[in-house]
Length: 116
Image (cartoon, rainbow, N blue to C red; front, side, top):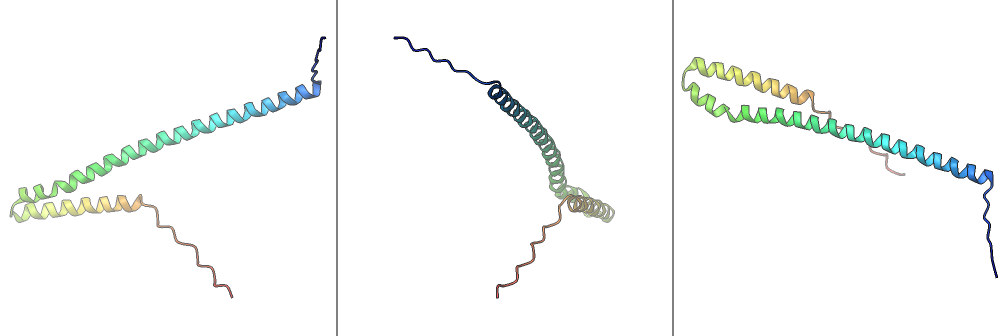
């Protein structure tokens, strides 16, 4: 006994399969593009964090060196006045930079009126 099975696809069915494959290919392309955008954003964020770390480290070095500067000035009024001016100027510049680069605190939404 012999059984032969023939499976035929219509042209419409083949076209539908190809259409769906094209859609999947487009979606994979979109995913790939979005992934590249995300990776670029991550690289930019890493660079920004590294730059910020450099600024923070510089501020720490400045602040840590203040006691040595005071000791070096001794009791000379002119040296102490110059040191005070320098510290005040740098403190203001640092405070201004922090304030300029700190986002404003988010205001909470207004409370909903109590149910009657």
